[in-house]
Image (cartoon, rainbow, N blue to C red):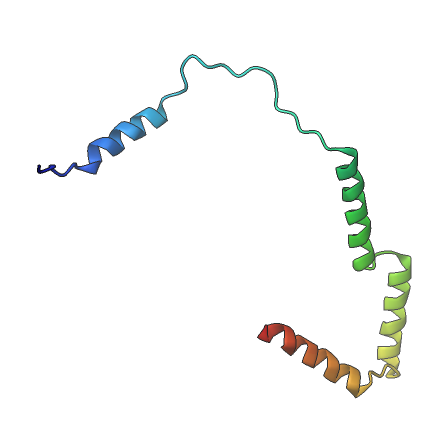
Length: 97
């Protein structure tokens, strides 16, 4: 038995025509709602606190930053070479993995 090939264009046109028509006989009633559990709310608050702590926002960070700027301007800020090397090497380890 031989099956003749089917051209895809008529099928595509039929689909596009159906997709362009609005849904018939269906009406939207009510509104969608989303609710969070108490655990999700607590988790979200904890994550906000953790992010704030990691970014070190606040007056203590501002004071530390001002102290560092002053030490750099005065030329008294020094970083030990072994710390610089460790940071460089730790960055290379992450890139190779």
